[in-house]
Image (cartoon, rainbow, N blue to C red; front, side, top):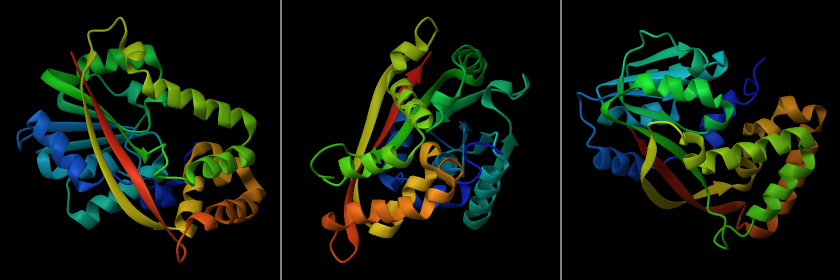
Length: 256
């Protein structure tokens, strides 16, 4: 069973969403069109692949976790999108996969081995193509005053080793110049879209289950106790059981 097998059913519903304005802004900046082809590495339930689907002509999603691909398949069926899905680690894609105008990577880069991933990107990115490293997250400022308590609870209930791994992954994701150093790629642009939405205390608490370090697989029999703890910490920041969350959605554009 993969790290995210126990999170697949919740991931699409509870992770910080990418708003429509984000996909529109990136598509306009990159001049995506019906002739464009996109491949989403570490696609999970297909959030990026399907979000960009209205702006491209061909979309492919790649993920090693069968349960995530099943979730992506169901989402594609609901939206009527033609999404080709491949069960594989990105680094192990066949050499005849072809080239793409846009390669998207969401919350997955830190799971990929650097050297083979760079070699893969060299052959995936079409001439004049681009890579978009994407993330959507709660803004770490006073507009989300509950966030420190929330992350403290996640840390308290996560096995220490997994929490340390999660921290290393976040640092890897942020330090793109280091990741691409020595390759033909460089960060060329950053696109940011800020939005707000309302989320129930219950759903925000359950979001902890979508992270590998605090997933049901990681915390085992402590799931219910963890959720009660998180809800208790969130309650003072809520109104009628609802919290307003400020989100920042970011695409770091990398070009050859």
